[in-house]
Length: 400
Image (cartoon, rainbow, N blue to C red; front, side, top):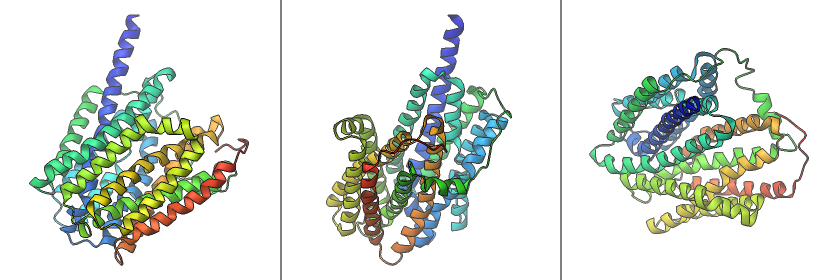
């Protein structure tokens, strides 16, 4: 009994530290993203160059995350968490004191390279919790990320008035606290260091093969196309808000706070009820249609009040699409392949996050509202493809 109590205390401590790490990750993203475009303007970056700046983080993260995960299998979770969070803190400091645009690009690259702390944190939960408690552990990660993305933009809104560099320094300070807590209070949880034999890090033929698969291919294709459009929207949102609507950096940060609140409310209170009422496939199709219409509506919007109404509705529909893609993929795949298919989907999301801002930055250089219209049509194509997903009922035959 005493041993079980000690184990439970240790498990709860680990969960608390991991929860803080995830909050830090979301806080950093939530603090920086709403002001990054305004901050980069002082270096004279064009919209296309800003698109490259946004995409650089995703590209570096896409490359480094599987490497960090493998290194944590070989050398342990704790050292990789300490290094990755410290790298995040350093990237914020470099960005805050960047004397030129090249240092800002270097800061975003460093942040992307060291962005593997969430997968490693997830591995800590798998290491330390019994299977029956694992869902609770991963639920804490989801809740912590949602909390961080609500609070982060609010912190940016409250502090950006003291200088555009101040939110970067606050994000760095929070990251340093997480480094200290991880180093002194999180024990090493990997009891099988060096035992796991891995295959290829980047299996691009497998990614292509998956899109052609009769079970999951269409859903993965929708995921890729949708996330390219979402990447276009997230990037174009800021220059549109500044140049067309005349919003200040703290007002943009408050809008991102609104996004976070909508996402949290949708995940906790609305999504499951809507799925029970409509079914997963119908809810997915309706959410895609609403997102497409709202993106196109932003193209025509020049009034701030109308803009807020439109993005509130689009935030609600966007909060449906991601989880429903994961759910559909899970049901289209056999039990042995769940981790593999979700990993493939994460790869497609990363590709979308890389391509979307670059495409939007290029288009915005010619006509700023145009990325919203094009992303709306892109999501409309996802809506049309979703009808094929609704009609399918293919036996699960393939493993990835």
